[in-house]
Image (tube, rainbow, N blue to C red; front, side, top):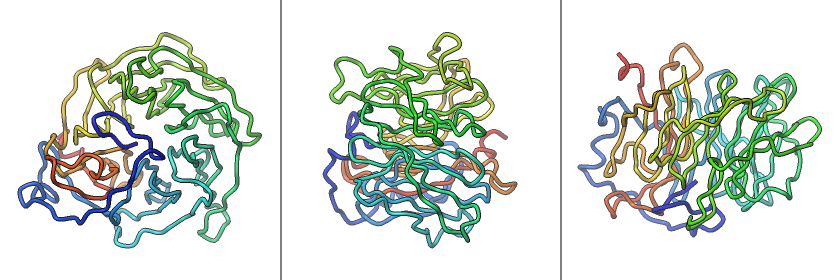
Amino acid sequence: MLFSGFILLPALLASVMASVTASPVLAAENGHHSDQVIARTLYQFENGTRIENIAVRKNGNLLVTLSDRPELYEIDPFNPAAPKLIHHFAGYSGLGGITETAPDHFTVNAGNITFEPFRALDFNNCGGRAKVSKVTDMPDALYLNGMTTLDSRAGTILTGDCASGCVFRIDTRTGDYTVALDDELLQPPPNAILPVGVNGIRLIGHYLYFMNTFKALYGRVPVDLVTGKAKGPYEVLAANIISDNLAVRSGVGYLAGSQGNVIYEVQSHGDRKVIAGNLNSTVAPSSTSAAFGRTRKDKNTLYVVTSGTEAAPVSGMYIEPGKVVALDVHSFNC
């Protein structure tokens, strides 16, 4: 999701084409130490491209959703020169969240302003080609985005409705859905320029971690792994922290800091630090989501996707399209 001060929904954002001419000072960070970690750009799309979300296949390849057009791409992080278009979802303006519901079987949100869940990817027994099938329409939802798997065996997922501030539980096998979570901490603030609350969500163990972008908070809630409903109190892990989506490992959150052009590391007790970027940095400007690698080679690599800087140029002048960045978190933790 793009930010320009606050959030602009993809369907409301006019694409601004611009040539990529980096300031030498700003561009010098790529491929070298950023503020804290080693960062390198794996692949950058053409002008006008906005990346919204990322998932990692069991073979290590990255799946990225685009919000400026309804396309899903696959990138080999060890040979990123030629991304593969997996599917174009005709009739929709863009894609949102993505989650692995079973081994090599993914579900994505596709739509216009209201994103509708699809069982988008099934690489099993397809000769390497994705089999695509629709899960359900959700006329009750206003703007679906963040997504995470609740129970892979049961084929159930959770997806957040940014605008209404709730989280739906969806049975991807039947298409049935219901509201699982609805709390003030998920809802957009009443004075928001646009009604956007809960954004990225990740289920780790029995905790659902979530970002509320307009309320600038990072939190979690214990949930029932069958119903998705809250089993305990909601917790605010960090306040006054603006982010889009996130990765979580060992209770530590890695937050895509959107127009702050940063990546945060937030401990479960709330301590935070910026591990990459700054307001004037081009390492990961307008970052939208993050995910850790799944192979032995890249298990300590945090892959970050960005929406580009057309809506909010870095330092008011530098414009670039969306890209995929690899951060060596292992080097930082050592």
